[in-house]
Amino acid sequence: MTERIEHHPVLPEPPAADDANFTFNGESYVGRTGEPVAAALLAAGVRELRTSPVAGEPRGLYCGIGHCYECRLWLGPDEETAERVRGCQAPISDGDTYRSTRGCDS
Image (cartoon, rainbow, N blue to C red; front, side, top):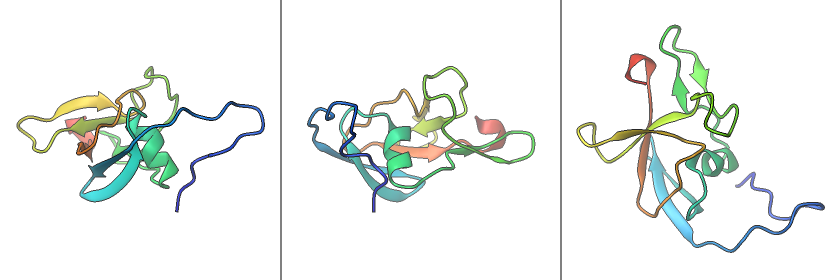
């Protein structure tokens, strides 16, 4: 199931894009190559991207323009090589591996 808007009465059709398979916290998802990972996860029904460092509360997509940093994720297959990215700004590539930032690791 997807919550992706395929046809909108006002906005133009989105450009065609290839599917991109990626993982988030060990689960497999399919997005569109080049779309922000936060948008693909939102379309798949995923709302929680990380937890806050103080109270461990869930955080997700908020501003969508890279200003608030609420959508911080780790991009990379392991902790040694992973880099922090903003989910609303990070374009998906086929085979990407993302995971949540948890508490103080964000």
